[in-house]
Length: 172
Image 1 (cartoon, rainbow, N blue to C red):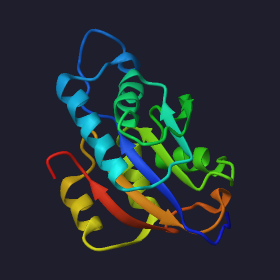
Image 2 (spheres, rainbow, N blue to C red):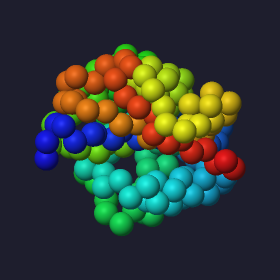
Image 3 (cartoon, helix red, strand yellow):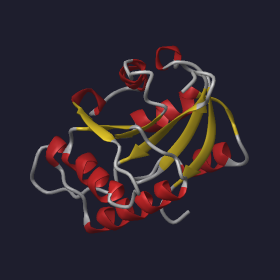
Image 4 (cartoon, rainbow, N blue to C red):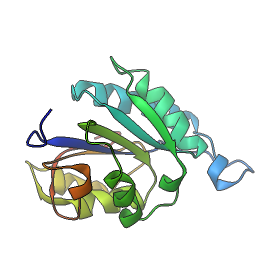
């Protein structure tokens, strides 16, 4: 694998969570969230991106979203549950991504808003088709994902270096 080959990052927001009497970190998915997570998994599988690595927040709703989505994949990537993704700012998420080993070509990050949407906006210096318009119009609802592409090493990932290639949200 060459660093000249574009790397892909999929930023995936957890599906709709319920609001029981638990801490925010322990909130589970709502019934609709379970359906949307599986649908997002099917849509992600349809991208044919061979994911090497998934970085998932340790929050219950992100772990449940990932478990339902990855079930739809033809190949399960290595998964790392990363505490720093929970409540992370875009800058903190970039710092986590900068630590990614260079043998990982395609990465999926399962996280939370506003960090995930902010990261998609900050990283994407350009966009293909109407992906930016759809992202701007819809925002980043629960179970949405954005596909970004960039060239270089993970250490060189910084604002504006990526292209927003695709965007999907439930009921889109």
